[in-house]
Each structure stands twice: as structure tokens, then as C-alpha cells.
Length: 218
Image (cartoon, rainbow, N blue to C red):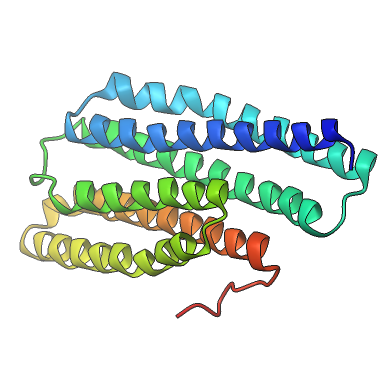
């Protein structure tokens, strides 16, 4: 392949990383908005999702262009198809940040139900999974990619712990139900962030090893 093609692949990788950095920041900001009860910051997260979507379209169009003009094979083909799938997961992570922001704005209209302890822990782990999955993509590090996939179980366990605690609140006082349900939804949105990071980790393994491991990792 000509040199300029590989320069375009490198530019594509940098754009994917820029998008990844943005969605990481979206998760970080939306959790701050929730914890600090900052409705303006939550609205900023919602508004910034347009930038995430712009990246999604830009990268998808670039991938299609590279496939059409250069008809890559082997490793280059895997790289482009992997990038397309990763971007889909990043866009959906951005959607989860918007979902959390919307629930945070609703929660701000009522007194806080409880101190937030496990939700920030869950968010930190999910955000770290996103970062490490992208690090694995850059360095083609399958060991790190598998580590990301393994971390998903910890996020799932935190979600179940949050659900059990909030269920107790709802059983003891039905007036807490609307707030508790919103917090349960936030935990589910964070679980999905971790799921998307796991998808990226699995695609990194495909990129490097040329085999699909989805639904097969322990």
C-alpha cells in the first residue's frame, strides 16, 4: 500500500482516540454533575453529545472511503473494520452519558435520597475500562484487552449491590421509589458503558489475532 494510505490510517486512529477521550470526559463530567447536583453541567453533557455524533459520522465516512478507494486486505482491512465497530461502541457510551445526565437533572428536583458511594465507584471502574480498551487498541495489547473484558464482572457486581440497597429503601418507604428507580437506571447505564468497553476489548483481540472472541471469554 502507498505511504499516504498508512498516513490516513494513522490519522483515522488519532480521530478514534479523540472521540474516545471525549466520551471518557462525558462520563467523568456527568458523574460530577450527579454528585454535585449541578444541572447546568448535566445539560452541558447533553449538548456535547452532538460532538460525539459528529465524530461518529466523520469516522464512519472515512472508513468507507478507505475501503472503497484502497480495497485493503489482511491487517489493514481488520484495522478499518475494527475502527468502525469501536466507534459504534464509543457513540453508544456517549448516549449512556446523556441518559445519566437526564436522570441527574430529574433527581435534582428532589432531596437527595442517599450519599453516593457505589455509583461513583462503578463509574470510575467503567471509565477506566473505556480508557484501557483504547490503550489496548493503540498498543495492540491483547493482554490489556483481556484484562478489560475480565473487569466487567466487577461492574456487574456493583450494579447488583446498588440494586439490593435501593430495593431496601423502596420497601421501607414507597415515597422513595421514583428517586430509587432513577438511581437504578443510572447503574444500568454505567453497566452498559462497561459492556461497550468490553466490546472494544474483544475487537482489539480480533484486530491483533484475527479471531472473534465475543461470547467466548470467561
